[in-house]
Image (cartoon, rainbow, N blue to C red; front, side):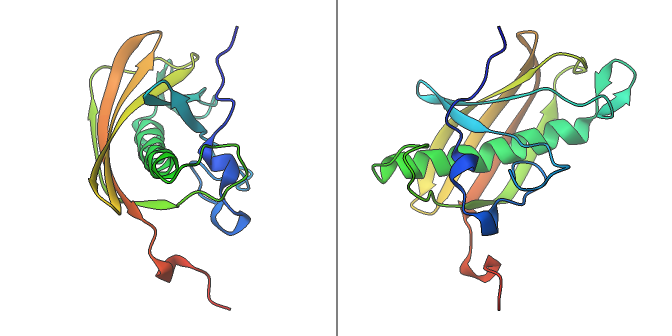
Length: 161
């Protein structure tokens, strides 16, 4: 039975902010990463496409970095949304975050052809800044770990008419 994230924070992003290549539900060719709660941790499950290879049998590192990046900003959004008394899937617009920094360590080659699980732990370091530690697993083996510092999206990111 395939695991899925039932209530992803990205499903609640308003249309104007749902275009990220990694996690934007409206970006047709994008990855469509979806992040939700798994107890007190966050989870994103993703199956890389056939073209997401570094060499036959292994996932391209850029896809893994993108997974950690979007998992981090989605996790920060989940955490602040929860702190504000809301949950994903309730119909309330969640806060949107952007990446201030991204650090990725590749632990071992990531096999292609199996779902990847990004598991995150969120730490609030400021009311508008969160640090998310993420581990990426394939076949229950740690393949990569990373850290994202996510900040609330600045108002300057709003499209000007």
